Image (cartoon, rainbow, N blue to C red; front, side, top):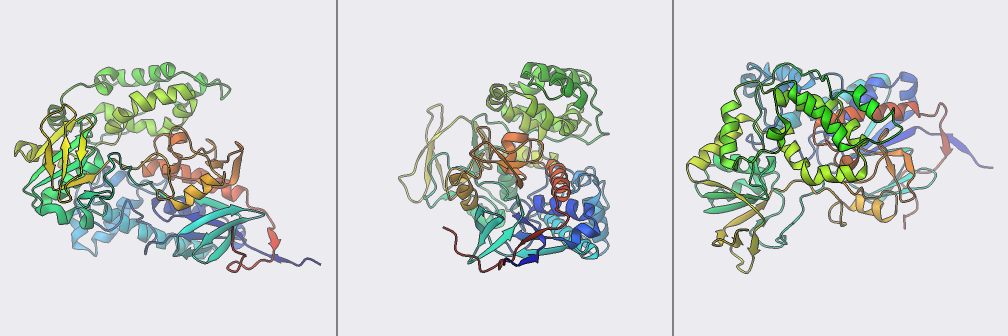
Length: 520
């Protein structure tokens, strides 16, 4: 006779950065005591701390958030979580008092400080879970494989955990090595943490940064703060830096690009719409604040002049930035409304321009870069160079225009997270899931997930309703996933789905959790 044992419904979270903390916050906030008594959450994180992840790990203070302190939060409904923590901490720590005494709507805090907040917020979340009777466990191992049987078999180290629901929150994939420089001694493939990877290079005479986005800005500003006296070249396809963030101003209320208008375009979800139709709504929204979409998205101003123009306007509220910030409410819906061909067109022609404007840098960083340019220590170069790696002590690059080769003591990759997992080294776990057909690559980025739920879609085109993905992995489905605000919103949906699907009386075969047979 088979003997059954009462078993808690187990939710496994793979990865413990900001996405994990946002999900836990939503679960703990929403779970009832009866639900809490019948479930537990198990978090897998090989790093020492839960919360900071890679994005907000301990690092130099020159690595700033690109959003002001008042708008940073892991809650989809409470935007004061970080600012309230800052003010409370300032009573005990002088280093934070100078920040909390300023206008937090204009304060750009070092990312490691936000990492400390995430760590503390996780501890508070666990304390709230205890009061409700919800068990949260942390296993300090990386997950190496997940297989699906009656329950999910989650391999970690030499053990297997059986789970009923899985959330993949593994964070960003590493940057791609576009020029084949990976094994050269003077190539820095991953610049974070800056304190370890970049600061020691401050004595170099010449450095090349591949890329000119927010990561490249972090590197340049950090080198400047460390007394770097050499020359620095930023090389990217356009040569353009991110735009500069103006003053926050009051939130913009969308009048044209609204959820209702998008629903009407899609006939209540019964059809796709065209990029032209969606863009017409965006143009009307920008026009209402006196902005021409063509001048905004098709700006042909040379890179250095554009930086100077941006800095000149940084001290005022910029209406178009308020409009773009407001699109957080509808961006997922608008993206989902587009047919595949139009999405491909957006990625090819508009995505880079959109993100440069949607995720601008703080004005303080822009001023540092301008000073470096004026001093002749920073150049912004456009085009794809060719690299000569014959010399073990340096790298040489020939510009795209065929000019004289440049010699660099070091080349730093700042091209940002890769859009796809393409080999085992990118992510052993995601590579296994892709190879086994539990997940499939999305042609626009990451893996395919169900739009409404975040459920991972397998090789049979079937959503797995008990395996969800959150964050960078879902970029093809949701487009704008680099914002913690957007991740928190999606975490709220997933947490609600997990709780609503919780069985009232969960029973499984009594199986040891840590002594399961080895997986093939």
